[in-house]
Length: 145
Picture 1 (cartoon, helix red, strand yellow):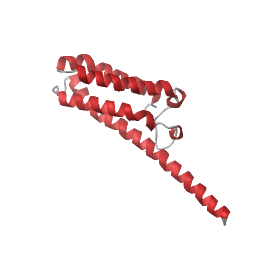
Picture 2 (tube, helix red, strand yellow):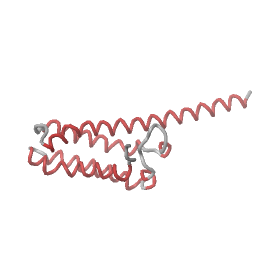
Picture 3 (cartoon, one colour):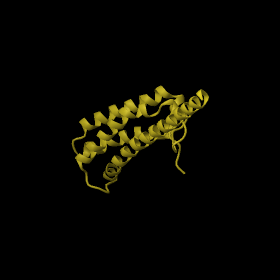
Picture 4 (cartoon, one colour):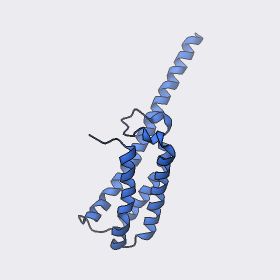
């Protein structure tokens, strides 16, 4: 009887870990998706496809700061696989560098929020914020097919 209870408890703990793993992967995917959605209108502004809107720029930068602050906690060691993750092994192999990139992105987004006052300052400042974002994708995210 004790063996059955122990086996059931072990199985439940394993299932709980699998659910926790899937939850953190889903949480990081949602955080990155929110940052991407915030980027869409500002990307159009940079291309001249949409009129400059300071409120949308500030919203994007706030989303970046939020994502940069919480993202490092969304890559625990037990989330390397599963949940349709696109995170590459480099995330865990270069953990300090990876986390430093989020800190830099958050700081750069905060500085950009203070610097951007009009369309000219937006066009001069925002591309660097996006470059920082894209650079992380090159190293730490698998390409989508």
